[in-house]
Amino acid sequence: MIVLETKRLLRKFRIVPNRLLGQNFLVDPSIFPKLVDYASLDKSDVVLDAGAGFGFLTRFLANKCKSVLAVEKDPRVTIVLREQLKGVANVTVIEGDVLKTAIPSFSKVVSIPPYQISSRLLMWLFDRGFDCAVLILQKEFAGRLVAAVGSEDYGWLTVTAFYNAEVNLLDSAPKHMFYPQPEVDSVIVRLTPWTAAPFEVKDEAFFRRMVQWLFTQRNKKLSNALVPFIKSTLGVNKEDAEKLVCTIPFREKRARQLSPEAFGELANALVR
Image 1: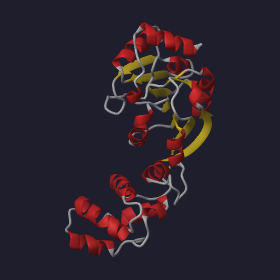
Image 2: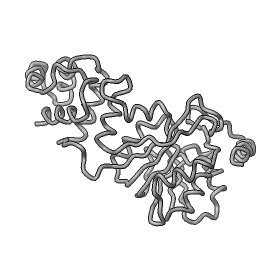
Image 3: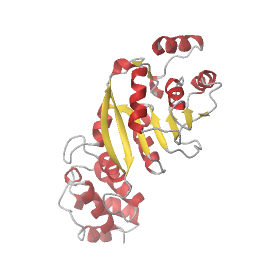
Image 4: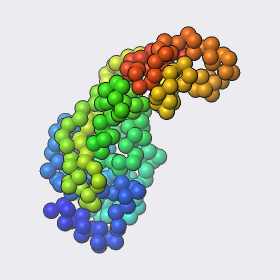
């Protein structure tokens, strides 16, 4: 059983799981085939496994695809990972932070990433080309990806994810599937990048910065919330920023009331 093997490896290599690194190891292999099926893996795929841990999922993936890039940040765990996957020719083990390390091209992602990098990992993925990502994410975080406009969970993450990919919440991954057991349940999430974006955005970097800023001011009217953003981002004085705000759509609305498409229209109105 994977749970017994995980405990044995932790004891043998004197590793104490680090909660700050999100080290909750998945120890229920019954979920592995689901991850592969949801990603529609085949022998042409190069798969990224970010946060590979002791490599149980990595080994399973290696039998289903062309090759696997197994990335692990913790050098102690990486030593075990290399030992566990010794002889598996189509796996490349990469030690380092997936967000900061040079990663070769990949077609799909199948991963149980550390929870604390979830939002940064998604932004990193959206800036790269990939066909599909199947991730196990915290249930609460996953809910933010598909939250309804105006709901408490609706935020910059919802808007940015909607623009970049189709998001599907699939099976649950209860906390008892992990060791040590986390405090919350998780869910399998599939991200499939759009072949064509759902709405037009002239400047994606500006759009993303604007959305993130506005949700720090989610209860302010846009006419008030946007002035400091326009000043700092467009490099204009307060008077010119106020004049520009008078010309934009939705200026009497609040960020939490705007649909993703409305954020796109707003960003395009500000990019001249």
